[in-house]
Length: 221
Image (tube, rainbow, N blue to C red):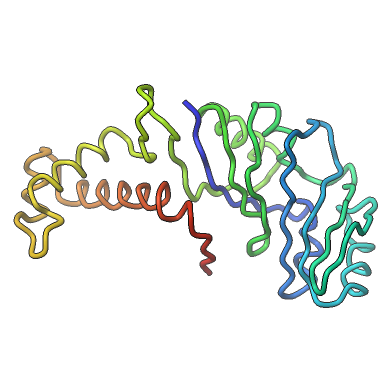
């Protein structure tokens, strides 16, 4: 069962992180390619910054940049092909090795926000292990299954979350005003109110991530 995961990664030698940390308000994203050579160290980047000379001076000093070529420029936006140095930390290699795809990759904070399409959860585990072995900080922000075995969308819900949401909905917990209390739903599930509250909250978060959030790009501090 394929999964989609959004992760945030940080490491001082991740691609272009020195440039990201040197220039205020710079925005960078990787231009998605249909296929990627697992050993490739050259990628196209879309860069938004107001001063090209300052940008290229910073790229010259960036320890993760071996060379770069300006392909196109319009106003404050530019497209560069950038080759990385051997010391650069890349997760694209391990993602390709596990038959995954980098759907969207953009800078966020001091690292990269990456949306991955992976064949299964073991592929995500492999990426996690690779990151740990290479001292890359990897935080999983969202993860959900794209389809369940029967072809019906699972919206990233676990069986427990689905059951809790269904019971809460059926009993009127989401009505205004509520027909039942959280403790009533907890009694139905034979769980504590605290456990059910967390299960409902995580389930609703996964529903939003798999539906509304997938069609609206948001940026939170």
